[in-house]
Image (tube, rainbow over all chains, first blue to last red):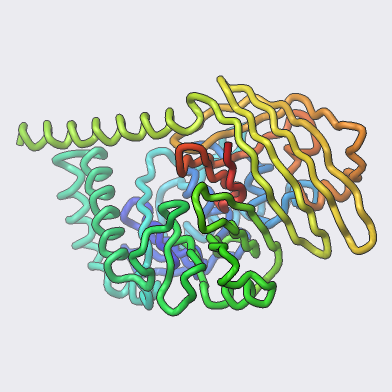
Length: 256
Length: 153
């Protein structure tokens, strides 16, 4: 399930498609994959400063990338991201440098995370958005009476209702994972596989696991995480009987 | 309008209280748990056991594992001592201050660099982890947003 991240109600970032779209003027730009990973990570960690080392690890997909990625490459990545934001006419300084510590998302920015419903596309997203004037009016209406708290509460309620909606309509079955809340069984797959609700592609993941011999019928359940940000598949292989005992396995390779 | 604001304030207070309780529930009283993890990467297979002990902003990670790359076999056996801070919710940043390599630790730094974050190799390094309590005696520990360890007491 891919997601979208709305910034200040003005721009929308689709990490999986690497697209930054303005809802004010409908401009759109595709970000380099390294920049997209960095931006997604910064947004996910918008409450804090992220060090160069940490961001390099994320952007260049390797625990040893810190040694191999030149400082100039790192700074170029940030320059490219800022240029992309400028291209779609976003007027704020979204990525702030904290001297000697790293970079972070501007604390003033309002970040809202949402999951995309199956089939929902970035292009459709943008074209369906209200015109700039309507959007600005809406923003003023929300902002004036309650300020940032109101927006935060509104966003939280939206996310809760959206999550409930997703639970009732998504491909995921309703059976609760016995291991952790954010794993679900999915329609069309054997019951021993539980999928992280942030996964991108359950079909190729299951095909890969079967190829490696991780199949049902061995009193084991598999709790699978496979996201868009890294070619990394991790799953927990857990006993089906209580108390649950699990082992973790990670494959770092492109499984698609 | 005033009532509405009071209701909103109550809801927000409740959310904050719940978040605080959840965070405290995670590591606040300390963790002592073990996890087994197998990593496959570029021909390497690393089977390792991790014991996480965290309490009152200090901790130790005991790592014991076997590295196989074709015919080559080496062993990891080291204790990593660290301090940690809870940045927000389940998010913890660990900074190591001492790595004690036990004589049985025969793995080269080159192999470690290829497969582990610097936190496991060099002193003074950081690692950012998400630690989520999933049952009375178990935590899921995530690294770079990916659930990586199922850690049980």
